[in-house]
Image 1 (spheres, helix red, strand yellow):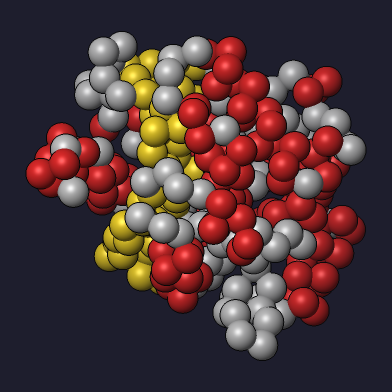
Image 2: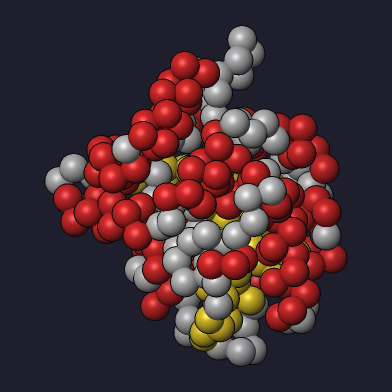
Length: 265
């Protein structure tokens, strides 16, 4: 865990997605630290997290990761914070806000998806067979899956360095922990949890996203009371890599004094 930036400003806690670590925020952190206190951390089984932090039982469900974040916020004791969750961590921070609203002032959900599998009345972006195939490939060929999927997830084929960066992150993640995190991610259905959240929230969606289509972002916005929605003119599932300035601008606008005051609400 690292705490950076302006101690007197609002505190942003940045939660990374599947197969990533805190390094995935390196393009946005320099754009934040002059105005905000920024907390970076690695989920259990990711990055530099202590190997003993990963518990196959606790981390078989997203609620285990959410409890980790609750314990982190209690340890920091910085007051209510702005939780910024990317991808599956958008769901994780929603679970934190639902369980412990006293710890969370605002939520920023970047590419959220409460359920990845399509149903008759819901578009998640994947069929059940596609998810089963994805998980089976991860199980049998972690390296091959990482090299094939990372460029698809990032998008922006004209910028291959972004796909290479995500590939490197996938490859250095403990395969056992990543497979468990993937099962918890892709097999979960947290749509009902949206109704439990009353924390003011911003949903940030890229106009093209192979993992969380625009329809999913709009679903989250429609079912999350008091939320705002921003559609970035950006491609891919990782705007913190492909469009950091646009992502930070959306956060700044959401946290601006005019938006926070009654007159600006």
